[in-house]
Image (cartoon, rainbow, N blue to C red):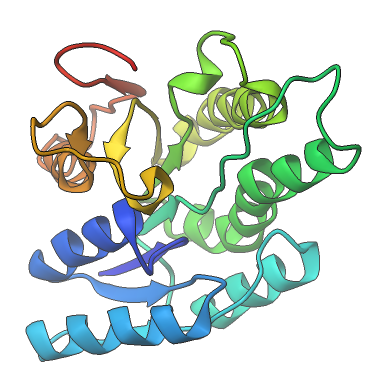
Length: 232
């Protein structure tokens, strides 16, 4: 079994990588930061020596690099799972955010998933099985102050998820959108979570693992998860 995970060097991506390695998945990992990605890979190899773990740093917000990463992954076999997790948050309002912010948010939060999925999907279709998880975020469910281009890019990912789910259901490939609220990752910087106000990255990893227990004829189309006390 092979899983592709983007944004895998930290946070949710790292937690998912750790969980899937523990379940016996070989991994193809990506992140932009080569040093941090290699550190995460080395840690996982040490923890799971029986698992094949490969990493390739790339900026998949760039179309050509996303496609190249997908082709590189296929060199290890057809993926059983694709986790489109790479993303970034920049606050702002559409009326006054920097001129290039929309392009940056769309390229990383939406187009990276679009191009990577399209690169590997033909092989998954030929095999007739697999799962795709897109990290859509609760920002793709409702507008909010400061959401700006980030929210728009996640709405785009939400739309992509719904459409690709419709197209792939006849091919035996499951597609799930994950709509996560605040989880304690590097995005939150030095946020003090000593009171457990927001979720842990591993909460999302556990959800993904849980869906793998379903029968072939069942799919979890959407998962919404928020902190117990609600959004911040």
